[in-house]
Image (tube, rainbow, N blue to C red; front, side, top):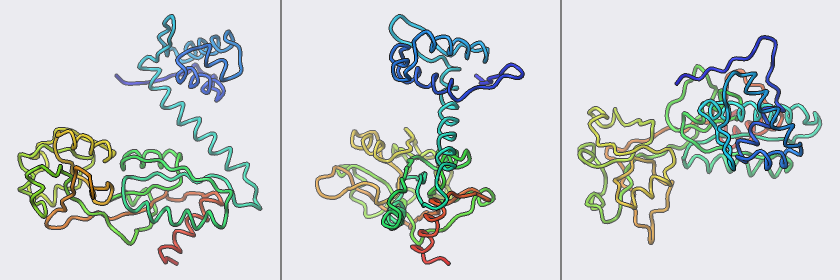
Length: 302
């Protein structure tokens, strides 16, 4: 279903009303939402009905005890949250004093050991400017790219290739290694490494964005993919339950000691470059600019 939300000419959607809508979506109850917003229930109900009239869409299914979102309501919830988050971020940046380095830095990252280097830069910056706050968002490359494009984060840490036309970036002096996560009682666990033909006829879990096609030497579609994931921890639980093996990067899970899992590197070795990126022509806050400077010093980049 294609989502389109049209407003009557001359009308605008107020941030206050979007906050009301989000509160009701969160609480799933008008009374509870009104209490959290410190407004009366009739006032809140009227605002929501006016919003539905304004948009020409039914946003809620109103039950006796619970309010749920319609498909249009779920679409608006995602967009409304993005709008409110961006508005709050912008307001906080504008209110930051010109003489004091403080405020918020928003960083998105895929699952990678490169976060260690980012954490090192954050610790250095925190020691100099303790009033800066850091907000980390975890997701796959598509998630991070989407939030970066919308201005919801300042920096994105990417594994593999990025769109150099859209972003400026720093290349980190390290790389992640691809391999296979298997149970220790899996026959594959007896191997020292995994070669392309070892993956044929194996039930596999794969991240949504795979970068293995060139390494495989055959079409990715020939693999028996039984599921996809964007967070390796969740995928590891599937592996433990015997759903298959997971194509993943090394160093993201502890597979030593009493772990039921083990990681087998690919042969030939396949690595993924790590880059921290930001939008071209980005105007940074003082806090974000200081973070970039510290990161450059950490990487010994002039």
